[in-house]
Every structure is written in C-alpha cells, then in structure tokens.
Amino acid sequence: MTRFRKWFTQSNIIIAVAVACLVAVAIAFYGSNTAAMADKDDTIHVQRERISTLLQQNGDLSDAIAQANGKLQANGLPTVAAPTEGAAGPAGSNGHDGRGVAFTLCTATGWAITYTDGETENAGGDCTGATGKTGATGSAGAAGAPGKDGADGVSVTGPAGAAGPAGPAGAPGPAGADGADGKDGTGVASVSCVINDAGTAFRFTLTDGSTQDVDGTCTPDPEPTGTPAP
Image 1: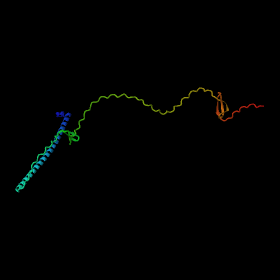
Image 2: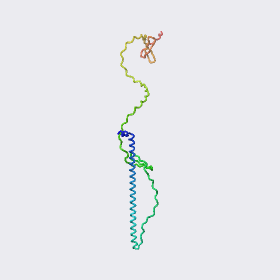
Image 3: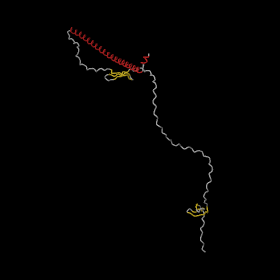
Image 4: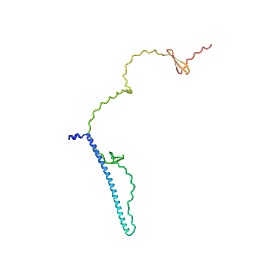
C-alpha cells in the first residue's frame, strides 16, 4: 500500500492520463480504418458478383446459340456466329495515390483527422473523457515582500472661509474724559437788506467781520438823498 501511495503522485497521474488519451486515439483510429476497409470489401464483393452474373449470362447465351445452330444445320440453313470476346480496350490511367492518416487530434467538435496529402476531415464523435475530480487545494504561498513607501504628501492650504455673522453688541463703555474747550463761536453782528442779481437778499454780518447773503424779499434801506437846494 505504501508503494502505491508513493507512485500515486501528480506527475505519474499526468503520465497515466496521457497514455490513456493515446490509447483512446489509437482505438478510434483503428476503428475508423476498420470501417473504411469493410466498406471497400463490400464494394469489391458487389463487383465480383456482378462479373460472375455477366459471365453466367454470356455462357447461357452461347449455349442457346449453339442449340439454334444445330437446328439450322439440320434444316440446311445458315448458322449464326457465336459471340466472341471483343478486343481489349485501352488501358485506363493510373489511379490516384492512396493516402494514409498522418495524425488525429481531439477537438471541441470531435476527432479531426489529418491525412498524408494534407487534407483534414472532421470525423465527429466524442473524444473527451469524463471530467476529473477537483484537485486538492494547494498550500498558501509565502508572504510577499513589503511594498515601497509611498511618496510624501503635499500640504495644501485651503481658501479662507466666509466671514461669520456679526456678534451681539457689547455693553456700553465708560464715559470718556471731558473734551478741550472749543473755539469761540461766530455770532451775527447785524442784518441788512441788500440788492443782488436775484433781487434782494438778507446780508448777515458776523462778529468776525465776514458777511453771508441769503436770498429773500426784503426792503433795502433807502439811500440818502442830497440836501435840497434852497
């Protein structure tokens, strides 16, 4: 039993399967040749029987002619010539060279037979054996080498985010310090009515000596007249 287990290895199984395939091919080839020879034998047998029948018919015809000639001679009449073998015809041309099987191949559609003249014929038939049993699961392979370090990443600064909403108002701050005294103000020293391009206007004379006209209807002071002559 130990020797059988040692022999029952994968390589020996492959060799055994190959030998079995070759044997199957040889059997199929022998079967196809046997069938072809049987067809040829049947054809030859039929031709021989036909020749024998023709010879028998020729002999019967010769006998009938001989009997008829005997009666003709007895009555003093001319006889009929017996059939004679005609001249041999011309020799036929040589037949084609025979062809043999160069090799056979098992294909998906059956046996493919290639002859010695290069022609290939699909003979069909099932030439594949039954599907073998599933083989045992192989052992796990060794761990692979560590991969190379990846390239350094690139730091990218994203765009600034949108401004957030305004916060709530803060509490009122403390009162500020008193400001410095302001400059002396400018008051109105007098108002008079003057005549301008638009008509009349109020002329404000300020305490700093400047004037400012404001258009409006007013009555200007009459200009003094000269002293009347006596």
